[in-house]
Length: 51
Image (cartoon, rainbow, N blue to C red; front, side):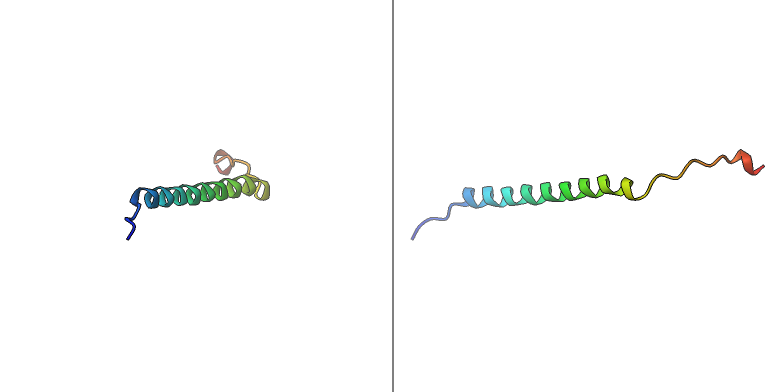
């Protein structure tokens, strides 16, 4: 019976984790880049004008 290669399994698991994390980071970056184009910032309001 062959002995399990735990180092290989660990490396594969770490690579999968990094890939998933990178994809999530890219989705977040794309969402934040897309959002300002949809909702322009509101102009600041002067509270002094209410007085």
